[in-house]
Image 1 (cartoon, rainbow, N blue to C red):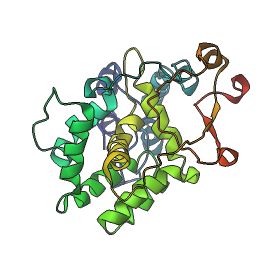
Image 2: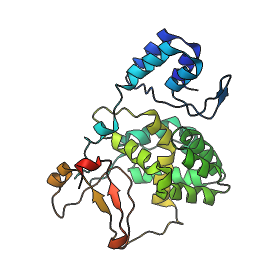
Image 3: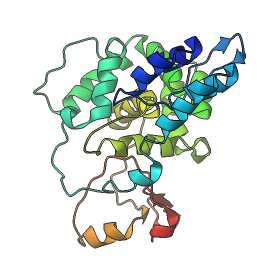
Length: 278
């Protein structure tokens, strides 16, 4: 249970008001798998907890605060792609840095060389995760954090019994569109481009999964690297079309999937409203 949920459980309006005044506070944070005297309360927001206990005034405060959070439509105003193709450094990736700091004992219980390129740091982290029985500790953290964000992905990862099963599931669960994990994940990555980075509770919950997905795509030797030309249809905003220069190389922070056959390339929705896309 988070501090916001605890304040609601205490029915302390003064405590709740102080917490909601913190700039980084996300009132849509959800509880982990849990039970209370009112029954099943796992996956509940503070507002939902207030309704279960009948704390009307607490619920009103939470409703007012939720109206100040960044909406999905506002997220569309962030750039879809960038022309900067220089080496991305760890300092540029807010969610990755927060995840490594929060789960240091699980992913990197060693000193990180600040001057080492990102690829070198990530390789060291993967070697640690991949050695001995460290994968089981990683699985525990992945499931614990994903429960509040994407229940189908949580259930798939929880069923993994070996390291290879876990690695395979991490990759496959992203490509399974029924889980909708790709939507949550890419919104979290796009939010890193905000001028004042304020990750949501869902973003933070996805941190361990995003880190592991990065590591597997970069260093797991069971994945076959595609060296030929691949295709991906794009759904982009009018503004993106105006910015794009034919033949230019560009990068973006989100994950995408692609096909070796143009006819099989699925449209990649770059988090844009359908009425303003082409």
